[in-house]
Length: 232
Image 1 (cartoon, rainbow, N blue to C red):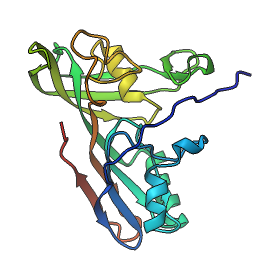
Image 2 (cartoon, rainbow, N blue to C red; image 1 turned 30 degrees about the horizontal axis):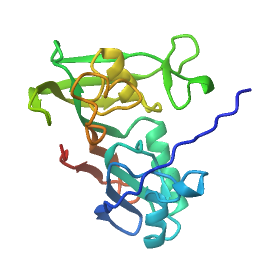
Image 3 (cartoon, rainbow, N blue to C red; image 1 turned 180 degrees about the horizontal axis):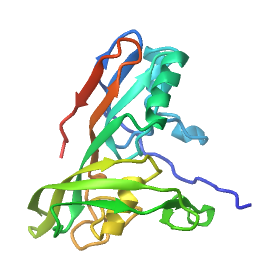
Image 4 (cartoon, rainbow, N blue to C red; image 1 turned 120 degrees about the vertical axis):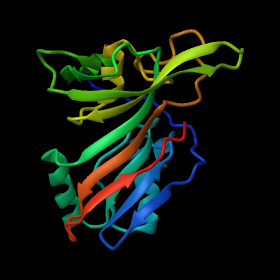
């Protein structure tokens, strides 16, 4: 069995975590891009969402994660019982997540579905791969919000499409690899082609933001509809 060695060292993240909502049971935050969700094994990767928040909310735990380069909404449980209840909602797929993204190029279709199984391959780490034989089912929906041109540093205009992405499953790197499969990788994505087109090399971040999170509060049973505007 191949041994996976993670050599990634996260650069310092000076942006603060924004608290969107909190009560005695859970916390909703806006994670900045460039911050790990959970501390890595390497001591240089100690800083993370969990590392920062556990100092403010002792005993808090992550219910789900966002990729290092992704910003946006995360729900944090303040005790084990709330964590279990929220994890159950995620596993039963009763939680709805929506993301805002900028994709390279202009999409032809205004909306669609990407249905492509995703597999882990230690030989490709940290990349995931599309594999119908060994992969786990993965499905994402997309909807075009606008087609536009972004002016680059050299004055050239880069065609990009702003989309809303809704993952119906929760595989690692799902939206990033599905957009690559669509032929329009997420702008700024260093793993799946979002920095390969001319003019995209210096994109400051992964243009992916968790903009909506809808779930049921485990205690009050109230439906929570959290929204956070994309910063790009």
